[in-house]
Image (cartoon, rainbow over all chains, first blue to last red; front, side):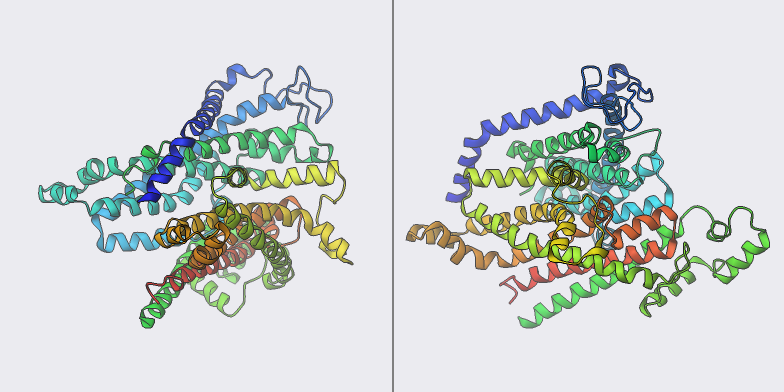
Length: 284
Length: 316
């Protein structure tokens, strides 16, 4: 037991500092969300407009992040790209976690054949490397935005399922579940009112992690030219478009990557610094 | 007791086999969904309907999908992977050289990443809570949060553009000396090593820290043993199973990483071949490459699970 007190003390000692990191992470995430929502109103130049006579221009007072391979303003393009990166990832992670968690809780409560068949099948899907899965499915169904959202959510459903099922199986052995069963409650009530509130904290933390995975996979696919297609461009696609500027050290290659990094690192740091009570709620 | 272990291992292998069947099913049907009729694509827009029908028959495209799937599976077992649509060369010939190249890249990466990650992970656990530990932890979070292509482009920017030490592209056919080898492999291997070791460091550190929280380690501490001695003599032998498990799991990251790395550096490996096959919609080639990757991934995660079973003293 001495160990648990010592780790608690450690948490308290670092608590204040962690909160500071956590707060700045929240700030960056909110900033990007705001940008994604209001991008069309705040961009200084139109995304398609050629504003520089030179391509891969340097940073300047007018073009903050320089110009891209056609002489368009990269700052405006990154602001607009936030809509695609955040929008697609958010939609995909919502679908993946909703279906994964719903299936996972149902499997844990129902048990038996339903549980083992579903687990075996989703585990099999889970053992296809995600980037490869994306490559094959995108080759098959194309890279329209709805298809991308669908693909990404299918890829990350098995992981969400596995996580939620493991948590729900633990809760399922609790006495209050037995009581609810004896009361004659049905499956929808059991999962929505008895299980879900007890696993919500870890499930939300998992949602954040999965959001990072999806942002990274989407950017990777776009970087390979299989994700978001022109005339639209997310951050991964912006890196791909301007990769020819790499030998000149053009800011057009660097800033979209930095945008991705700022978002994903913030989300990861936020999850790492969540108060223990939220993160571990119901995880016992 | 011994029986129980072998039963668990055999069970795990059987599960892997079933998984492999489901995976190959998924790969086959995902690629069978490709829009456009293969025969029409091969013959071009101006082909007569009779010619298209003839080719469909010759390629058995009119058979039900399940029959084609079984034939394809049977082919895989006889190492007959079909013929590439794009240039009419057997897939096996196309893949052979590429596969060796990818294995070289993966092998080199593993031989650098594993010792590096274990050293960093274990030392971070020894000096838990110190500045060193915090730097390692924050560094690894940073690396696993950024896309691989960002590490790759930053490496190119630093070593090829600013310092001009290395060429920006890999061309393996001009290896004549150790010097060439280093110049060509340095950046791809460096990029992959970053990603793989970040995962491995985190998992190794977690495994060692977990054993450090046990009563016998506290006993060693009370006895007055030094910190390195506690970790190396008391904690490490018990953390060995989880660590090997972590190594195998992290290496499976390589399979995703090479897809990006081979594309960025134009390295002639299987992953580059597959990305190219996706853009030319070369079905047999995509299927075979996908199966190679899935097989490798499955082998690694199965190995990780088996090590976890074998290292559990309660089962031995």
